[in-house]
Amino acid sequence: MNIMRVTVFKAAIPLKAPFRIALGVTEVAENFFVKIETDEGLCGWGEGSPFPPIVGETQATCLAAARDLCRLLIGKDPLDIEARMRQLKSFLPHSPTVLSAFDMALYDILGKAAELPLCRVLGGGARELFTDNTVGIDAPETMAREALEIKERGFAAVKVKVGTTPQEDLERVCQIRQAVGPGFPIRIDANQGWDRVSAVQALQEMAPLGVQYCEQPVAAWDLAAMRVVRRASPIPIMADESLFDSRDALRLVAQEACDYFNIKLAKSSGLHEALKIAAVAEAAGIPCMVGCMSETRLALTAAAHLASARPIIRFLDLDSADMHAVDPVLGGMTYGQGGRLALPEGPGLGAEPDPVFLKGLESFVVK
Ligand code: MG
Image (cartoon, rainbow, N blue to C red):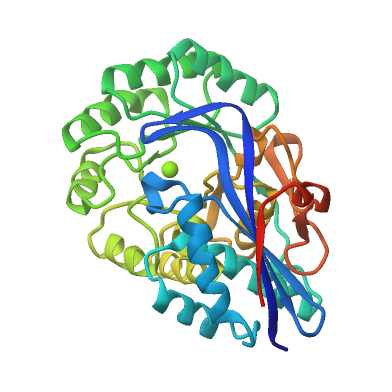
């Protein structure tokens, strides 16, 4: 089986409301879809959602890069994913989001060729998965109201964006705890917004409020600061922007810089590398979360298959499609009561973009 044709679609997905984190504001998810077709009639779908301040890619750079990556795939075996991704990565090593869309489409083809759902192809089964839902940075009373809504909608945990000043962030978490009551899991994410002194201060003051863990308190590159904060913090520390691939995972373990990993396909360049991060995590005894940028249910389905297949992934933060004003995906994982994710039973991803939605999009074909 060989790759015959690749089509790339530029997609804009409006959000229900602007979403603010310490690194910036998102109003529209500027994503793209990749469709890889083979000479045996199978086709695979992938999606990328570049978040520039984290991955250094934009929708425009992803579309330009995709043209070159397509040419490297034509005529090649789609099932030899290690070889395909090695070639794409050696051509473009620091563009994880565009690579992840191609990786996802190749795994979709693999599942369809095997006639198995992706979680099965990855050597796992369907297990119960629950996602949290996230509150963006805003006035404390607004965030408290939104957190309560998330609890009332049945989600099992709320993730709270922080990372302005320790005083403001403490007030946010304080009001949210009052609104949701004791016992309801609150996770926080500072998105690199603090320095080591303010991080230690904020985390020590928040600890009595009951915070499950804190993502990325300090700058992504500063593993020494991650380690200092982790040692002083009563709240466990999760590496997100510090963790792209399995080499980062190994460095974080060696430097004892975190308690948890946050794996995202848009950072890892897809499933092939996410599986390697999960292997490092398992060997080091580091539980993981799988997270998202602003993907539709297409890429979220790939992440949910991964989580289902790897029990070291204990936490899920796959809520981006819930923030979108439109849902352009047919099939795929769905949100149920309690933030429970239901995986599709079809082969591969079990999800594809709605052809009606695709009709209105700019696209190009390489064959
Ligand atoms: Mg994060």
